[in-house]
Image 1 (cartoon, rainbow, N blue to C red):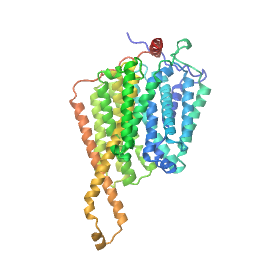
Image 2: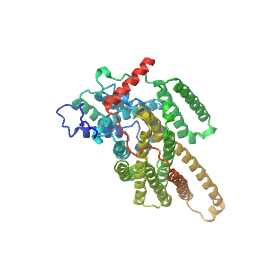
Image 3: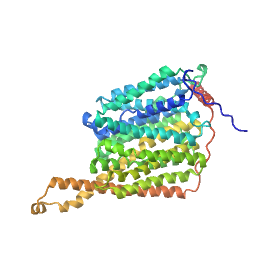
Image 4: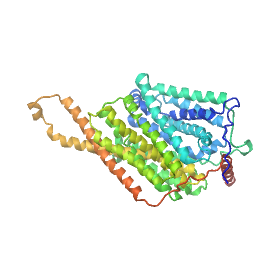
Length: 534
């Protein structure tokens, strides 16, 4: 007997709003939330110049936003089943407005860190609230082989679009215009909620899930631990690593924080992140491969940026405009993953191999193309391959995580997954690449040092400044090429590992998901057990 699927409805809207446009309103609101952030890297150089910050300062502010997004995953459903949809979206929009107002000014960096963390929490809460209400419209059976590809079309489009828009505002107007633009989007969300919706919660008032029992102290501790690690990796090269007392002190603080969190998790049966998630059979391999994948993808933010800025001398707007070509590959990757996981239900291992092969083609293309005389449009095909591979791997790893986790622990697992997926693995890769750049640049200068002497200069006078500029550009291009070569070895090892792995890690068919009422009842019973234990 076929499973009966209830008709899709959105009862939070007022009756006079046409049913056909209701889901699309929430799609647009999801785009609005995804365009928001605490800081916008498309305008990084303008912020550095105006605020006298270092590049590492702006990058760490982005990490704080991403940490806020990651840490908020375990409480998303508790918020959904405690507050109304209208309240959550309105408050999330208000928090983002305040955060964007504050980050336009040069506040002390610790204050900026806290503001960006709050902005990240509000961003993921607003996005989740929008997408969870239209999930049954996108896939009536809650098929995550359909939902994740469609979700990533929104996420990747907004990420690339926000970077280009921030660079466009910074080039033609002023970098703060991106903040004002996002404030305008959030005001539009608030007006939509006030005029078109009414308070609605999936749980009736007498069965609302209480917020008691959430281990906020552990949540703050995990955020602190991951941000300490991110700080060490982000500032390590500038601080000279172990030669710095600050790095040694922060490593000790990270070890102490992790030990305290482990003890608290062991003693608290309902900790913020439970030990049970680590015991799932394939959870640790998935996290390991996500870290490895993000290390490989760090070339986009490190090597590409150095090549564009220092060798090609592209402006931020030129770089972001060129980067939009990767969206073609990203959309193709999302649709390809949808067909592979849902229509064909083929092995996800082969899909991972296809995604990593696309990234390998991107790295090989850049290895042969990197030089100061390359044409602008010659860089487009590698970027399309990069976008395709990134989309395929993001979707596949998230789908695999969902398949190996029970629904009870899935969002806790997403918290750890996104810590490494959003910035943890990329931060490790950036630190390794920065170390490699320092090594190969120093080695290059040492090798060319013998050809630079006063005797040869006096024998044939020439423009020394122009010569040194050309030599530095050449050494940078050579260094980028060498590091791309090492990344190609990593891609090939990754591909070989999955080709040799003959045991399937997750089921190939999407498992059934319970209804919102059932999920709400489970959450309520779990919260009541925690309250009774307290």
